[in-house]
Length: 162
Length: 235
Ligand SMILES: [Zn+2]
Image 1 (cartoon, rainbow over the protein chains, first blue to last red):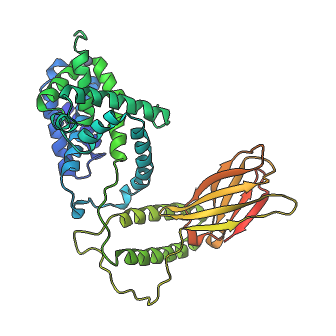
Image 2: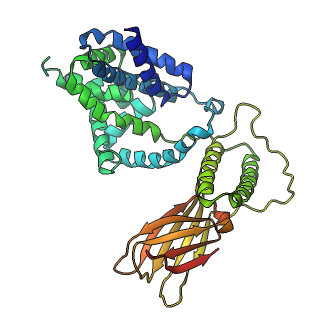
């Protein structure tokens, strides 16, 4: 058991470090992932491949929430993480991706785009977004779902995703 | 478990992916995902979306840079360029191209980051009293067609952090496609900047890229598949 979870821990840390450079922060997020998963993990069969896939599912959500929380924090220039040479090639990709994302967002309806902006880029909760946009919470939830589906389709049409 | 959940729980996938669900909904979804393969598959299918959105997040406006910062950066950029050109002469062109690209990208990323925090870049008086004005970002070079061809056109070269972007507007192209655009730099270093096929009209508008920095580019030439040079433009 310990060996298995040591392996899961390593896998999750590897995954989280793709998005979070700070190792302590990444380890916190891995622990949060495991704590959340352990609340439900007894429902799963003991197939390690399925456990892994479930853990990654939760880790994605944890990383997304952490990223959103950062977006929402007031930014200071000195907060910028050090850019080292190893990670630098990302910045070129980032320019290209920035253009692709603007294009994909442009294909959404104004209502769907407003929900993506509020909950994702501005880090608002569903309840806060509902108040800001003057729609019921259920509408924010369904628009978020249909917006993600529409974005998936847009990225497919643009050849970014298959 | 039946799929009576779909109207309600399935909708939560959007908030689960983008964030914003409250702890109760998040826990419901965690529980549901542990048993519903359908929703896990759908989540997996949609999961690249937030990743793409994050990587393409709008660049924040951090205000104008500190006075003197840009001059300081340009000075460093010129020094970097000179050092790079010297280095490049000593290396084979392939190795040089790789090194230049990495150096250019690394420097470009650093340059984008305003130097806050520590004792960052201070506008120091430059040792060079009169620095040349920054080069214009676009340089236009006219092609001379090789003897016996009607090839003509212009190349517009624009400086980029990673090298140079080259927009071609050609006419009278003949010979065996595919055509290639080659960029020549210091010491005869050559890079292929783009490849394209023939067009019925013989006209072509294409854009290529090279890791050479704009000031290091001596000439660009268009050749056909056999290597025959159709046109050359000297900078
Ligand atoms: Zn389900």
